[in-house]
Length: 497
Image (cartoon, rainbow, N blue to C red):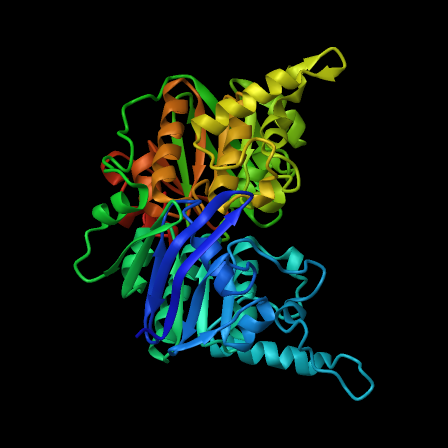
């Protein structure tokens, strides 16, 4: 008998089965991974456990006792805390107010005790080793990584005995990922159950004792991590053998320079960035968090107005807004798909076609047949799992939402791609497809600036890697120098040129 058991769970949405007689169990003292492709049913299963969904059938047992969970409040009362994949902070409230929402201390007149609230937040951060976040900061003004930390703290503040981490590392910077993996192990050692969803197999290997695999809404296997064959796990997840996880890097770099940047500066974040990007090249952007990587992409797309020289295919340009950049053939896949990349309440078709509407007009109207054909082309090309192109983007898994962001950018037929961590929250099979798309784009003469927080991606996908340090280019690595150790060394200021 396991400490937590989910037995025979089924759940359908509009006749589409998301879960089919799934059984899952785990014990106190372990970090248990739940693996599967996007749309395999992982998030649905955990939303049933956390009370966000009601199952069509199935039983939950905690410590051998059957329990009923009809809503999130009942789940919390049973000691279940969930960090969801998509962030849910209230942007206009402070960090402290978000963490203790509904439990903010008040005086006898009902007025918030701000000093007490701040003290509670500071104590919580110290307990879990969180630094660099101001309890009084407005949540909506924080970076994506810091907002994810606040989400995690909000759950930990309730002291749950069962902790669900649904892609909680996907929005974190590398040092924060290490913090969370260490925290998961410590929580399990303290006698808690930690259920861990991640598409990064290195994280699963480093943090988890057992794993359960779902595929197409069904349970496939539960395995001990010791001695497990990761390639076999991946094959079980996607239902087929997978080879060549990273595409072969055949030489595609051309002589022509697609992008030339000279002394680009903005505030105290970019401090004279200079580099060139060739046609047919994938140039990686790496480094520790906060070294100017994200601001570089935003400046090149015209979101941030930076000083310095920018040449696009030999012509001096002054990026001032996203629409102008898109007209010039520059496209950005942003960091935060929910806030910056999608209109979640609108259909898949609308989101994919939005940047391309100018070319889909017939007179003053949009040619809906061509719009539908465009959407269908990329739904098939990227294997977007949905009930159809009219389904709202909000109803898709995080990985399928990311595919839509990439689809709408590719549909605009850019010549220069600015990619910000495109595999965040994406399953291993889809990652391979995305890597292949990037290399194919370069093979056709396109240029790619590939920002990634995953060192292995930088090494295996990029022709060269530009490592940022203190808002400058600390090193550009290529050939035999393009190794994980060299990237990490350059990130902390070693081997700087």
